[in-house]
Length: 441
Image 1 (cartoon, one colour):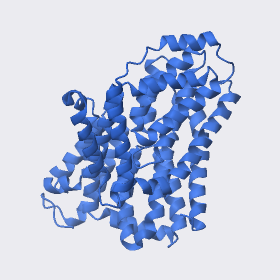
Image 2 (image 1 turned 60 degrees about the vertical axis):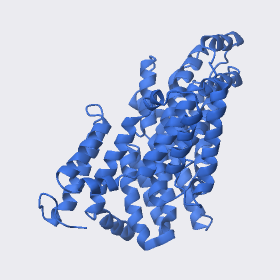
Image 3 (image 1 turned 180 degrees about the horizontal axis):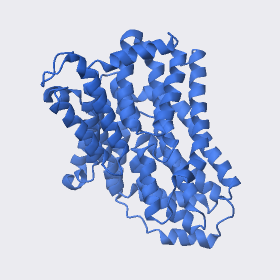
């Protein structure tokens, strides 16, 4: 593992150099205002290979293609669903269900966002939900910013529930070898509780601050419906996309025991959808978030250098010492620590590196490490709600809000999100810890 690099650097230099490159890459990712995070990750990967920490074939082997295939496949299914008019139709139906009542607007759109985020990419979810929410609440005479913050919180919380809901879960599922059903059993119950509690707390805060006062008259609701264009629906395409999506979810649930990885399932079913759908595949591929896929590839290479240098073996030993042999202590350390860190830095590179540490720990603890995987999932995903820069969905909604003339300030976001996040994280991690201590999980 510790052979000399291509530049004949001493083996003792490999770990410090790999750590230095990881920190430098992380710093560039945080400075996304000046350097795009995909460029930062690719620069880090290039440096790893140029310095000889990994040869090109080793770098290629460090990339987790199961994660990439899963993201790519789900992106294509979502793109076809969007083309069918499915999301526009759902948004219009949701508006009718609100009856112009502010509380119903909060619960219905937050609930829809959480539900979609559990089964689709949460960034894609907020991309189509946020503009709809701005239009609806503005036409109903309400202030958009609190409702947009509620959408952000629901997106990250809902995405915590499943394997495909949030990138940290995709990473954990691939590295730990966990399937869709594993997340439904071990993570979803606590995510659902946190989601419902989060929306209820948001209602309390918005009520105290006068954001839910008033009732939209029937003419305002009608104006809102007329203001939104009538959805153009391709029912044949929608049926095809929803059918393939349902089959994909079914295969996620039964595929893991059969040895079928989620990435292979998503790639296969999405390719079949492209085969039967009457759409131009090239046009669909242009809508794939290639920057996100390349970002993951670059990070996997940078983290692969840490693994090759033996850094994760040392980190796993340190974590074992800190736990003192008590998995319950590990749940609190990893769950709460992940939530705090993920509130201020990108949770994707953090999860990739932490997952590698837990994989090393799995060699000594075996199945006993499983609760730590679920603690990492809950902490990394829920912690993204702590600040405006905690998760990609937060930044996407903030950009949409600014473009629509309703900017979300860093402090304004924290006034609502931070207390709610602290409570929901403590609630979810605390309940999970209690379940583990009682032998339920």
